[in-house]
Each structure stands twice: as C-alpha cells, then as structure tokens.
Length: 109
Image (cartoon, rainbow, N blue to C red; front, side, top):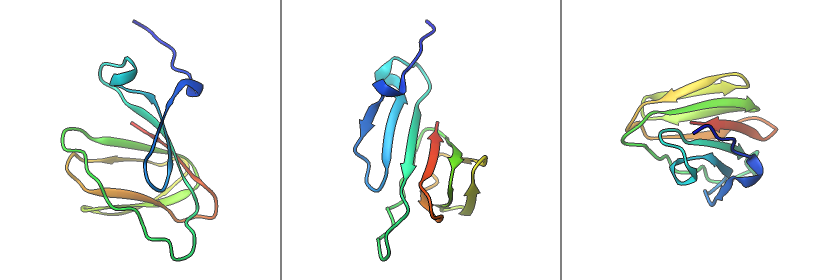
C-alpha cells in the first residue's frame, strides 16, 4: 500500500550527540526501508566525539543535505559535503562528525 509519511509524525530518537527523527521504518509500517533525518550540531570545544557503531545485517546510506563532516570508519576517513552520499558496508564501525561551522544535516537510509 502506498503511504505518505509526514516529518511532523516522525519518532524522535534519543541518540547521543545528535537530533534524529525516524520518518520511515518497520515500526512505522515500512517493509524494508528505514529513513532518518539527522542533525549533528557544531561540536563545542573539547567535546568528546561519539563512539562508533555498526550495522551487522545491512548497509547504511547517508546523503548530506547541508554542512560538512567526516565519517570515521574502520575502512578509512571520508570527508563529506552537501550533496555527497556515502554507503557504509555491513559490520564497518563508523561515526559521522560535524567538521564545519553550521549544523550537519543528513538523510540516513
């Protein structure tokens, strides 16, 4: 069944160091897609970076809407700017950090 998912109805996730809205997911009626809108603020001086995480059973695709950052992964460090897309392989521990002077906004699939 075709559906429209409203951002205003998204579930706010309590993830550390960022604002994350889960717009589409299995818990919201999707069979195979998860979509999150994530905003990572400009880090404060001396702030410790978030720990890396991994997804064992699927790739993560991240599209940069605005800002700039770096994804630090087991496989390397990847600089990102608005319009870039990165696909992280299953099992590759990673964390994306804001390296700019404005919020880093991402669409994560």
